[in-house]
Length: 405
Image (cartoon, rainbow, N blue to C red; front, side):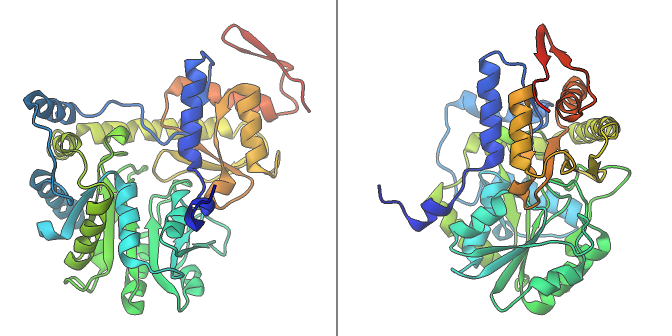
């Protein structure tokens, strides 16, 4: 069979594949614990559900504008003013089928083949593949000090004549690192001086811990007119626990949004009107669910960190936000794929290999699950890798016996 060059070079999303594997195992009755999924356990806000149901009850579920319905644009405009202190017009906004599509369409609007898009490592698994889909090249930047916190010097060293854009994801998936206000100010200034597009992937910007406040990138922009190359990405998936609703958005200058709209119009058209109205309900409704989720996640983080500290040789930085912890298990196994597979095979715990995020020897653990899952999952991991662990472990009524070194 003859496939295109892109088809031959695009890899399946490892996080989505693992989530599907967890569902299959659960359907078989296996006692799987899924640390791989980036999905809060809490329910979607009632205002979102009611808005969707109200529309469904009309039976009038029709085509919508490719850039989003007016009601959702209005809600996004209000959100942008609240969190970015920026007043924008409807022509500055596009609603997409998830923040993932908003990023993808933005890259398709600005990248030419062989041009480069830069992003700090560790990075979200889809950034390199998105670049490939544009015929472009993804360039990871590894902080010179070995931390998860890049400096502007690290970025500057990788920018070349083919560089077209930079993606900043803070708080970061997979590390949970929230970049400093100084770094955000520096990167905004640098991109303006070098005439580069800056895509701010802010999907986790309200899920932050230890008294931190969301950082407003727009505050540091000097170009505040329609020549700005700043693109802000957000959505309802994470902060409102609405992952399956697939509603995200981008805010940018009118020319970029127009180009994105043209592209999206030929790809999917506008997102489902039912799901857009649910997003309107979430954005305009009672906001306590966001803070409740944030508090729950912070508590989950604290518990996971305390449990991981009991495993000798595991190294990690305490996450500043998101619901991920990126831990170095190389003292036990250099290959993150081998380690991740072993944890699935031996103790039914799903994790994501760190190499998928650009860093070998690490695995990503999600603490978005229940407290019981976190406690039992880390207990299973410790038993699987600790040579001093007891020979037997019970998972429910099932007895596991260590038959490996």
